[in-house]
Each structure stands twice: as structure tokens, then as C-alpha cells.
Image (tube, rainbow, N blue to C red; front, side, top):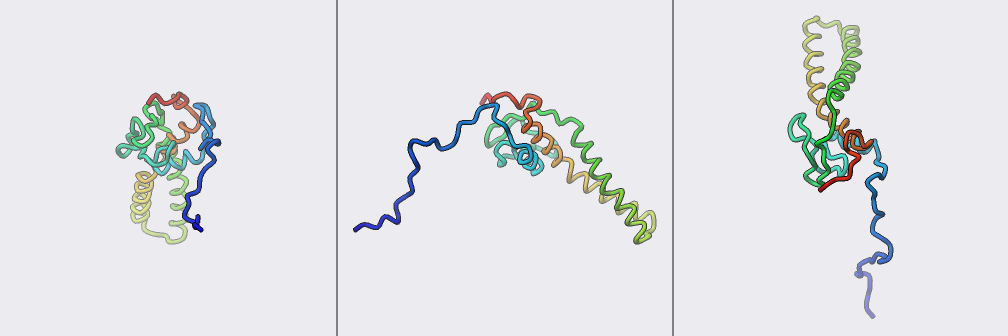
Length: 147
């Protein structure tokens, strides 16, 4: 007798591999925002979203999703200011009350922290805004890809 433990598993030939997706199928918002925050394509999650520090690519090199019509504008900068301000204000208060450092030292430490935090968050929040726009089909993302 022959042992069939090495036989490959077969799929049902009648059932489709995946359901067809329509151009207006709903997109999950939070996974797209998270992929954008990681500076990845909100569609496939593999391709890089940014070409430089803040320059968004025209399209994804992996899945060819177009990005040229995004409108992030000043949103990422406002979000960065909001987050950094809400972190640094309590840090200023706590640092001054607990340790009572020299004002110049406190200014230096908090300035370096604010600059580092801003430089870290700005491209990630830009990616998150582009991912949000993609998920909500805003500013031309609703159109079917032409590739």
C-alpha cells in the first residue's frame, strides 16, 4: 500500500480563492492609519509611503496604488505640535517641581526633547494622515486605480 501523508492538500476547485473586491468596498480605517504611521503603503503595507523625509511618493512601488492626489497639507504639523505640546507641558511642570534644576538646564533638556520628538513624529503623522485619507476615500482616493 502507498502512504498518502505526503500528498498536497487540494482546494475546492468550485469555490473562488477570494471574494472579488469592488472599487467601493469598505476599507478599514485603523489598519490603514497604522500602516501609514509606520510609513508603509496603506493598501498593501509593504511598499514605502515616503520618498524622502516628508515627500510622499506618486504611487506604491509594490502594489501601484496612486498617492499623487493626497492632501495632507498642514495636518501633520498641527498634530505634531499638539502631541509634543501635550507631552512637554507636563514634563516641564514635573521636571521643575521634582528636581528644581537650573532654568538653563531645564530649557536645554526640554528643547532637545521637543525637537527630537517633533522630528520623529512629523513623517509618521504625515503617513497616518495619508492612510486615513486613503481609508476614507478622500481627495481622489475613491477612484479606481488606472494601472
